[in-house]
Image (cartoon, rainbow over the protein chains, first blue to last red):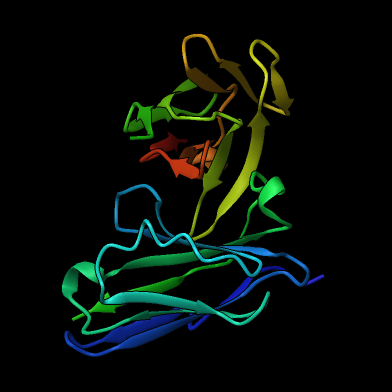
Length: 115
Length: 108
């Protein structure tokens, strides 16, 4: 079946603009994760959704970042008033459920460049 | 605070060499340790380790976990240029925490 998909694959925006990144998880996966990877750095956890539970937002770097998920499907990560330091690859991953957290399947990522 | 530290940060070797990548961790509620290979944007899964002392092997790659000393190593033998990538270690505790990665470059 289809893997995790993300859109857009690349996004260039001007400082101060808002951006929305989309993630379509694997069908049936109840857990969804967003990560950020800045150039030359490791993956940084942002937010985690599990079913209908309240999301774990502990990794969001500021209140300019927010994410939503509709049921157990699509998720959008929104960055308001983008800053140059937001430039990074944003990766989404999904897994069958929290008990199978280990087997995370990653999407291809969205490369965001803030000018 | 949960922490995963990888070393070295980067490594350049010649084809045919053997490399050992290190991952040490401090996490609460340890459940598993995972190795990923990242070539372009998305990491691909290599190994999951949950028990100490049991080596996992896949072709030229192998990995082992030491839960007493809180580290894991990833070995790659007879390296090839296609092994050039970032190798990420992640530890699953209360959440999945990634290390910064080791950048491996294999020269022909």
